[in-house]
Image 1: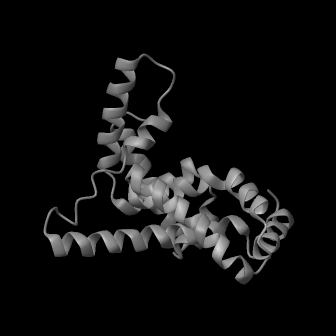
Image 2: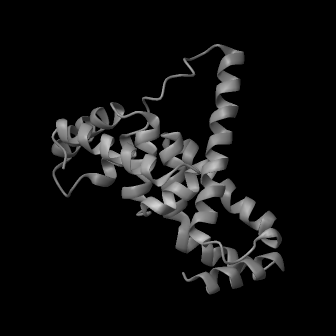
Length: 187
């Protein structure tokens, strides 16, 4: 979807046009899910937050200012909502004392499935497990950059804008993550 089309959809949404939201949904569902999943690392929670992103788009369409790059706009909303979810979850965990809020090990299973080829079920399970182990070795910030770069197909500049960090930091995190994955046998 081009910038003009997106801006027109946002204007239509602001007027209550549900079809315009559906157009954005169909075009950007996978993209926004991958951004959210890159932050959260948990499939079900990422699905919930992604659906909330579309509610946020619906409720704030009248505030959209065209010309700033709609993919970065969408990714910023998705990332901020995912971070809010993490903060909310950490508060709940701290209050309940059930689990370790620093545990970030659940983030690689979907990436593993997305990267696996068309192999037999046993091969897929083994490949998913070993890729999950490899991605679990990445720091959360590295895993987030890898997810945005590979799954969301964002440029380093777009990632830099969304994360609000220098592009050099983005490329450094990406290169560090790739080196770690190569040591685990992934290209």
